[in-house]
Length: 280
Image (cartoon, rainbow, N blue to C red; front, top):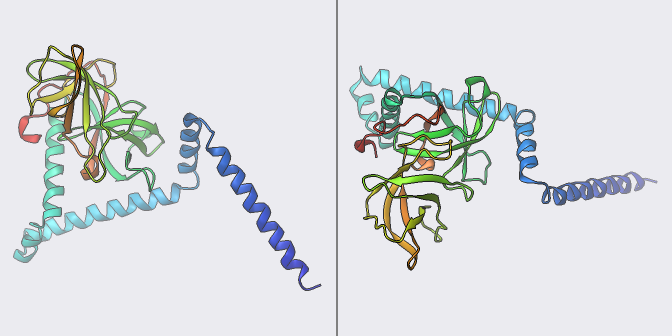
């Protein structure tokens, strides 16, 4: 008589386990569009307190940094602390982002990079701006150095950006100077190396020197013309008589971005000259 409740609980645990297993197996066959909507629903319900806590932590960190800067003006010891590499890099990025905002001839929304959208996902970024700020799908995301990615999911207060490292990323591009056109896509990285890009579809008759700047072409209606993507490293593949594929070193690293600008458009406006050479 005493053991019956234990057996009942054991059966209940088994049923719960089997239900979870079936749900997990079913999610493997759900289309990506539905999983994106499901993830958005979870962020707007179950994960709302966690996102709020993250935003509060970021705001607290920014406030503490400002306090250190104020104290640094009055205290020589705090002035030395201001020279720490991490703080110096963050301040430098903020100054360059402010300068970029003054040069960009488009409407934009500044945003903080809160963290990766998923704990195991290094290909997307969660940004502190959403529908309430005018952000919509396919708005480009840029850093002072160049292109970071594009908005792929939007909530009221936050949005998710797919970076250039995502396997589905594509952008029409051209080279500075010669004006050679091609398509930029992620390159399959070797183990233990930094992710790189490829400039594909370059006509075989055209040769691009190493170090040539690659920029968005403005074709396709998503990315305005003139956003730096990266610089050519070398040829990695060629189809004799047809085309060459070039390896490209990205201009902006999403892993190092703490702040960004979300461009609201229109995409027809050119950004040539908004990214000076000293920023890249």
